[in-house]
Length: 453
Ligand SMILES: [Zn+2]
Image 1 (cartoon, rainbow, N blue to C red):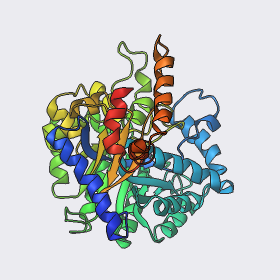
Image 2: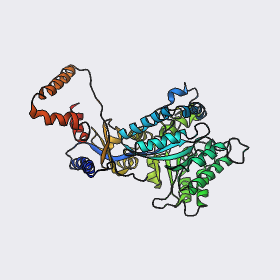
Image 3: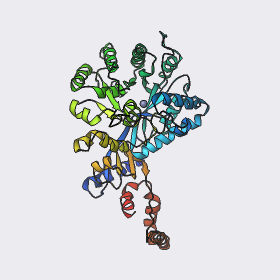
Image 4: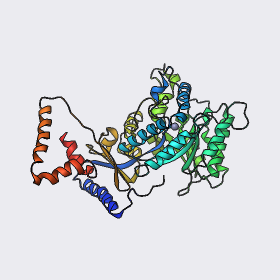
């Protein structure tokens, strides 16, 4: 993803920001600060508009995809009449993400007859609102079918809206979910329509595709590959050029090694990335196997295995937070890594390096964590996020536990702080502790604070 400009406008502030960036990093490297600094995090695939709506979906009865589409459709119908709610939920997702250490995200915003452009409007607004803390790449996304009926030859109203949406300034990606089309032929036409739009308006393409565990189903990733080849050099791997991303792709889990190698040969020099979405994939897929001895299979792409065995361009992401497609889990990519370590049985140094590939230009401090392994396998809650040389978010928990001396110790600490205020010689320290430390110099204070708790 491309980088945005610096947070600060004045040179003085830039210098201060750089100091706040490089000084803690230097201390980290020298081992003076015993904190873990890692590359900042990215949501390569997240839905900014249908997050935090689970309580509006009623009690889930079947929990399957059909029900999720139905109850989410009912919730979505209310989006255009409550734009402030759309903004608030999106704002909550971005803010919590940055606090976790996310500094860039691809945000899917739905376009269809139910929501019109209301989700896209909210996404574009949030992109501006958070431009200094997080780069939000906007994907105009058709979750609903582009063809209204199985007998339709031409796409309907949803496609006309999408074609209008992608011309809006700030949209960088166009996406769809071909598997929701009434027929396979229409799913293939969906792919054609999206690649045409992407090519015409110089956008990336992003498909939710092959979202099943049916060995008899045709893997439509080959349809994407064959169609992309028709555009000549357009979709080849080029520096800064457009890419095709395929999300879910759980069908590929059924591939044999020979089928994987065939797929890799077919992709060749095409700029195609696959993104596994473990929280959603495992919650939704494999339900037909629930009565088997071991229950549903681990129906999500084995990201570290596929990356190391085949050298595949692959990532994983959070996808949804608190909705009927993914009721469980948080917005935290590090929590996803912990889950992945269990699901993929991947906790070796090499596995962790694959899971934690990121942009080292921005970084995240995970307080109270001593190693990269610990940050991935048991990530701390307290974090400081640094982007473009500036601290853009701090998350600090307050802790207290009932024990014989805890109340007394806390009271003594408060009394000691006010007692110090009587002596002018202590004032610089108190200014540092109460004013500076919680903000700009949080990075330095975090260590002592976390150790004293
Ligand atoms: Zn998705």
